[in-house]
Amino acid sequence: MAQENTTLFNFEEMDAAETRKTLDEVYNALEERGYNPVNQIVGYLISGDPGYISSYKNARSKIQEVDRAKVVEILLQEFRKNK
Image 1 (cartoon, rainbow, N blue to C red):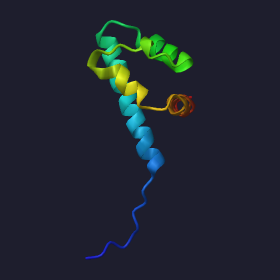
Image 2 (image 1 turned 180 degrees about the vertical axis):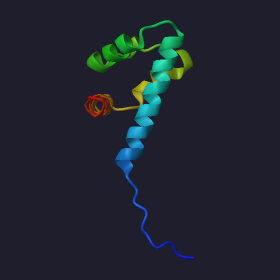
Image 3 (image 1 turned 135 degrees about the horizontal axis):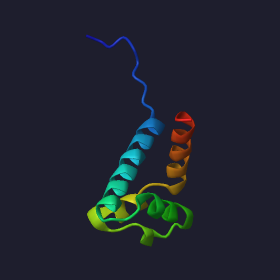
Image 4 (image 1 turned 45 degrees about the vertical axis):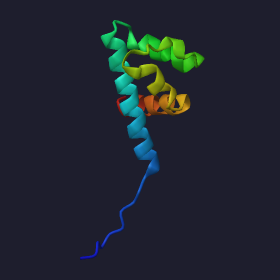
């Protein structure tokens, strides 16, 4: 049986979902280590220095895999949605 509707692939939504997942994992890892995740992630986003992110649970490697500008874009979109 053929599918009647074409399924649309939205790379941007998939990319944003993966970025959100990574950010959540990094946030949780920092929190588990006793850091203030907001301060640490903001420090990284502003400076680009991965030293702000602990290597615990591979958080530093994970955050370096996502585009910092994409993270800022997603955070701004979430802010506007929740306003």
